[in-house]
Length: 347
Length: 215
Image (cartoon, rainbow over all chains, first blue to last red; front, side):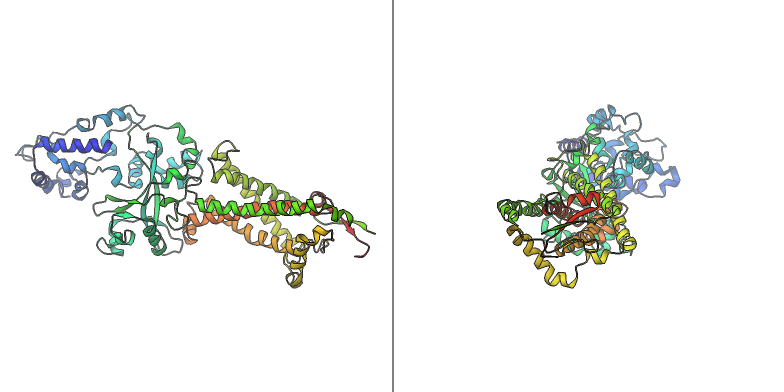
């Protein structure tokens, strides 16, 4: 719903500016001719530089530089006039209103968290990218310390959750899996999030996508997931619990103190998952994973287990059968014992 | 004509270990049920309380297992004698004891095994306890330690096949303990009175009946 609204807004803006895609691209190129070169930092500071690759992946690139910087004279930069700059509110008024009512509003402005020249849709960033924004102000050690007062296995939780999953208003979540790669040669070596370049080295070009999506249909079936998990020795999938809806109502939600909010959400809540493939421009391309794959007994997601919520039904049945087997002795033997009690009295 | 004799069968360190272990395992089974099935089981208030109690009971059982091993290996030095089935136990004892439990018992025949401090367990008990104490308990403790420290020990967990394999193994072994608990408690009631085997585990002393023929 939210995404559809922004898409409409983007189309409107694109229409208002009256530029064709080609004209907009040419205009962006013209700006990036100077602002996409690192040398500009020497002429006016780092604020003047923007990474062209990262900018290309933003929705702001789609609407074009002049949508926000409308008054750039033909004599720029020789005229020495600083170009005009749009306010975030001009396009994102509902978001800003929501943010304005949150606990966070007095602490940071939009641009403190979102660089407009690198801002991406939440579906195209990793949970760790999101947490890096928070870590600009919230020091990691301090966050671990404050959560450790009440949250068991704090580091594990913080590693598998973007802060906003608990601290914004999304009522539901889904699991996104990211490819991690072994960081060293030790048999118990650390795995870290793989970059596009690292994956491209393992399988040149975009061939690494075929390691996961072997039939190339743009979806990941449970069978493909199993094949990857069984075969890729130095790669693993790391699951993160992402918020279903992106809100800016930063808050401390009461129900997040209660572990059962997530842990007793049950297997029914664990049906939706995605696999995120890193792209060259730093974005993630999200592929849909077969429903319920997260609950697969062993090979679907071998490293993702959320106590209670992702339990395997099959394993639970086997376990209950084992316990039932233990009851056979008291029930079966006990019954025969009762029926034959006279025999023992005689002896 | 039968004669009764009192023998000191279970020394105090073993009794302390046994009851620590027993209460620990019962606690682990119940809290474990809440941890795995939080929608259906809620006996300890909050989920976190169940996890904390589960972890605490796990540590108690682990320490108690360490003390048990230390006692039998270095103080009593009878671990092999008491817990490992002899060749005779494997060849005939297991079958003989099985026939007793599943056939002869119902006709009132006496138990072919008489407990002594050096030969406390019948061949079936030896086989079962060996499996429980030296295979399943170390496995459930090791998997529990890994599960209590997923982040710092992640490399080891991956090396062992992943978190799901570990959780699955921990759960299935726990179910085996639960099944064992039912069987163990029931079999303990098969003495000459239903509580005859419970008392020595509390006092240390067991009444042993010797029949005239057997003597």
